[in-house]
Length: 310
Image (tube, rainbow, N blue to C red; front, side, top):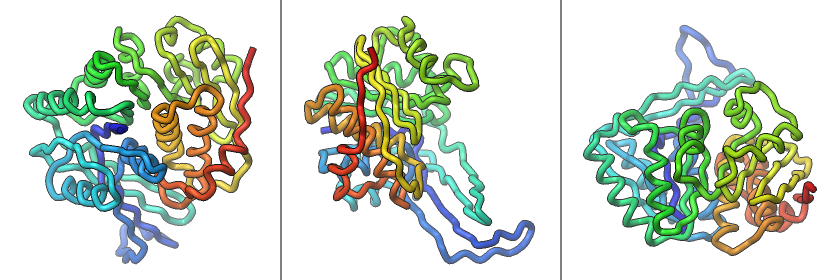
């Protein structure tokens, strides 16, 4: 089984307008409401890959119940911890060729709720093969919260795939408890290094630094260009096929799902990279976030080119 962590989930609400009138009445017909959050995108793709998956994090109130019901309906095990606060909404207003987003902060997690989660996580982690941790922290959790989860997983020799950025990623890289795989994109790695833009040579030089020595896998995604991956002392360049991208949102989460599934299936190096990146490609080809066309998996894997960098 694979356990996904979404600490700060949301109900994603999408309003689509041909024209949006400021300071006026707007009536909407095209509305979608889905269980949102990076980890839940991972969960959906894993479920489509026929992997046994459980989703965890914090849920509360009416919106939390909505998310719980939705993930159960599609066959994802609900392992969320219930909280007294209300789960947040995240609203996207798509209009006039633009997208305006309104993101709520979400609930404040109490010390008692944090303790319950740690206890439940310690129990869950002993039943799974891989844990994925994605996205931001809600208020009330310390910046070392993910470090604590990684330490528990490492104690039980469970591999952790981490997809976070900013201060959260920095604190984890500086700690003694390392994940098995991290997946920054080019921009996130640049932020980590204090550089606005970095090319492929700079990426490789950065990954050689002691900062990443104790992390077995580092996968730096490059969007439509593919990825650069480091496994131990081996480096790979992966090229993605040219596609007509319909909705690239959630492609990074889909890559995480592909790597998690690949690890459970015992794939190594080139084959693992191909499965991981193919999920990102397939997600970008779909309108819905965190969805793939399973009928095109073999095609996508075949189109991913992976070369060893000497």
